[in-house]
Image (tube, rainbow, N blue to C red; front, side, top):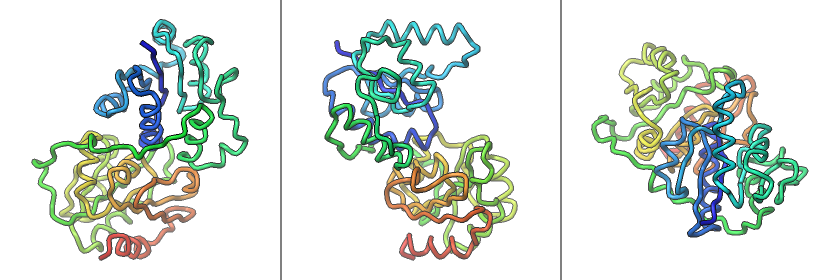
Length: 303
């Protein structure tokens, strides 16, 4: 059986923005065996999607863990992949071409790739356009809208309020400039005129506690939802408001009207969520007034 490998390691926002390329690769290779090489946080989500026959979650071993690196290298070499789509296009993933073997066709930026993404403007394109250009260079011309009905989970027992707004105050802890202040999110929740629900990962529980202490009565689901449940919550929200983070991208992908807040540490022209999305940007992000976000939220939700 002809085997295809897709590489997408991280992070959540980038993983969500690869849904379109995943769907295009599957449509281009009907009936072939497609394996996704990713990392543990995204493996379970990928296994529920319709695009892969197999998902490997060991795609980013520590380079100092020589045994783990050797296991991955041997696994990649033995699989006998005919073609690789490197959607990570990092120095790490490009090195994996040595593990896979030079006989496999390679789409990406690795030296010697059979189907290189050689667009000199690739670093100045939005992720969606850059990945489409890469796939076109590999002979893919059809880009179907990715089906996302699989992004579903039972959230009936959570007790979501009617007409709520979803607040996503987290972002990478290594990039604090991507976080609108907790006090601003608290004031936003108080001024929305509708119930508000907080969501985020376990690492953001202290942040959520700070917001709920300032605005009691919020439903705090931080650390209580997996990625599919987060998408299901977003589908039921009237709108989502969040920083440039993976959960904000996921909410937009789930079809929720989304207000994305950007500061100086990321450029929405290159990585803003796609969908029913409005972007507000201020440098620094902390200078973005609550009143401006409330106004944009009112317009976005048609309130």
